[in-house]
Length: 283
Image (cartoon, rainbow, N blue to C red):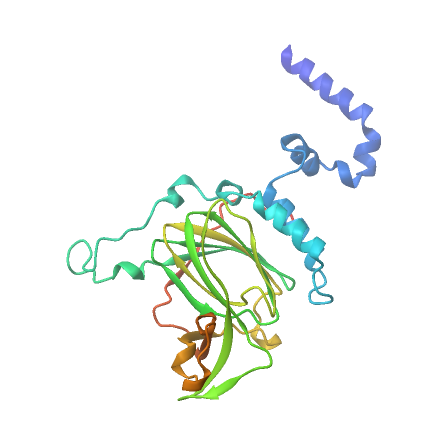
């Protein structure tokens, strides 16, 4: 009896909504209707994707306005680990077991624990990704040519040291070229904290990270790294200003400057891919 009543109700719904089923109104599709019932705004990561697509498409046409930067930063400020599928287990440290491992045969040093890279989305306009750091893990000094990067610490504490190039360029040849840069950031970021933004020429476009505690960072990069478009990731070593400066050039501000020398990809950069377990993004 209950089954027959249910069928009658379904048939009545179909008759009353024939116009909807026939016309297939785009804002009332079955998929969107179910999403609307679940949450009027949908997952935050979907909102983030939608805003990135609106903000960064087409890529590189005009500089970002201050309003666009503020709008995207404000949304990123509301995102936490659970919004991108990071479970409580991800917050625990991967301590390792000392220099010689558990049985003395696994000779992996403590600082060689891998950083996990999680790809959320990548297109021609932007990249959305997460870096999960164990304690003491390091991403060495590197650049972001012609790129804007939004970084949000999701949990934990991270030390950031960042530079911008001094303009006009000042280059010396000291066992290879070194270029003068100015310190832009030398801070510890601890969640919850505001989103950081770097630009092509300001805000610390060349930066390095050191994990003080287990931590994770959500990054939005626009446009993405792309070597054939001149956006290759280059790594650097930094040297104190006095290393190559003339003796008569000493200044009270010399601690705010450093010489940067290009290096290859560091051999000890230990990174592994991870799986994105957050809400699916509707593209």
